[in-house]
Structure formats: C-alpha cells, structure tokens
Image (cartoon, rainbow, N blue to C red; front, side, top):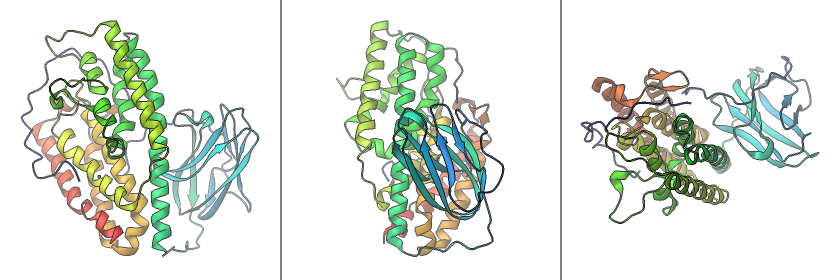
Length: 402
C-alpha cells in the first residue's frame, strides 16, 4: 500500500473526539488483499495424488507440485534447494492467517508440514532468508466429499489456536522489521517521497499486532507515541515523530539531516528490540481473546476519531490492520468457539463481514482514501459497525476460556 505526497496542511479539527466514549481503550472478511510479493505460477493445475505435495524452495522460487488438493489431511514435503535458511507457510485466502508452517529449514534439508484443510482458497509461501512476506502462489482445496473429523479436545484446539497466532505475530514482526529498515533509510536520506509511500504500508504490520507490541511497556511509547500524549520532558521518537516531518502542518520547522538520521536509527533499533522479544512471547487463549477486543478498541478510540494519524490522515490503513488482527485472533479461536458457543461464532463472523464490507468502500488503488475525505455520515456508519462488533467480541474471551 502506498501513500501519495500531500501538500502541507494544519491538523484537522477533532470534532469527532467524543464519538467513541462508549468503548473503553484497554480491553483486543475478507480483507483487502495485499499484493503477493514475488508470486510465481509454478504449480501444475492438477489435484495432488496419493503421497505428499512436494515443495522446492530456492532464493527466487517456490515450486509447489500441485495447485490443488482434496480436502482432508494434506502433507507438504518441503525441500530447501537454495543456499539460505527458509520457511514454508500455508496461509488462509487472506494471506495473513497462518494455517500451518515449518521454520528453519537449512539448505539441503527436507521437512514435512501436515495440516487438516477444509475446502477453500489458500496461499502457499516460501520465505528464503526468513524475511519479508515470501514467494507466494494460490492453492485450492476442493471438497473431497468426506467429512473432516471434528477434534473435540478443547485443549488441543486451544493449543493450536495460540500456536497459529504466535506464528502470525512472528511473521508480522519480521515484515515490520524489514519494512522499517527500508523506510528509515529513505527517511534518513531525505527522500521524503519514498518515505511517505512506505509510511502507512509499513505501519500495517505494527497495527495488526498492536496489543502484543504494547505489552512491552517501554517499547510502545518509543515507537508509537503521539505528540498529544507526550509528558513534560519526554523524548519524542518513533513513527509519529517521522510522520509530522513527512506530512508537515503549516508553520512546521523541518528536521535537520542529523535529526532525521537520529530518529531513523532509533526507530530501527527499537523495532529490532521488538523483533527479538516477540521470538519468545508466550500467548494464551485469554490473551488472544482480549487482544482481539483491544484491537477493536484501538479502532474505536483512535482510528474512527481520526486522531491516530494527525498529519498523514492514513487512519484507514491502521483501521484495516487493527480489524485484520482482531479477525485473525477470532478465526484462530473459532474451532474452540464452535464447540462452546456456536451462536456467538456465527454472530462474530457476520459482524466482521459487515464491518469489512463498509471499510472496503473506501479502498483506493492498493490503499485507501485519506481519512479527512470522509463525511461525518460515513464516519458515523463505520463507528456504528465498530460498536455492533465490539459488543459480541467482548464475550469472546469468556466463551473460550470459561
């Protein structure tokens, strides 16, 4: 997603500041597809026969032996034919939710990924060097006509959900770090046009996992503090410090080259710290449920009001990312919820879809319209749908844990 340069302007008046008073700040469907970097069309359009689906991962290709398979238990036999350590993922159609993964496959090594996959659209991805979003291609699972056995072991379902979300967090921080390094280099070099283009797209990865990132209380203010929240004498670093320089309001004095370099270096250092800490993060079902509600509350208290991105007005990018993260937490927990409260599962599915449908109306190219281009009625419609989803989502944690 790219953000085009805009002429400097003063921050818009926050007339909607009180709109979200009904939702608390501290509580955590199809989305707009992101571009699939390095896609390759190298799979045969035939269903997998008996035996594993073979995958060859190199530095510039991800060759999958079949583009489709019957529903049920699938085995991917992944061989690293390249010269870098690689990973292999089976992702849901959205390209975000991780269905299964194998990591740390060294050159010349083969490993198997076994998943139980119902009929639907998926994405396969090899990630040479274990960086970026990988080399991707579409994969279809067709209905085999044989019902997939339902695992009623709630602990196993819960363990699977937390493992999948943990993998998702690690993947997003990998992409955040890679994107931050590119952004910081452009910002430090004074290439404002490139940095503006990268700003919202890179922040997506932060916003999708915001509750996890915020759990590191010392890092969150370094990376994501808004100017309005600064305490007297507190140093201001991070994304929003760079935002103000890239999308300057009237009367703003631009940073010097040395100041930009310092902010850029600190941004990379703090993101590397976040990356390291998330390698060992321990998530539980209650953290997933609460995190989903927290993400929606982030939408309600910062994105819907237009206060998060005071100068860039790229709030809809953040809005989408928060919804992505909340939805994926719900979908990871859904097998548990289907066993315990299927009515709630269906209600959440319906209300996530309604919110996404409305949000998608404001898509523009590979991004969104700027938030200050929305009318009050359009903002109110989004706010109403956030409210409608927030109420049942607040019941998710209790439903899966108690």
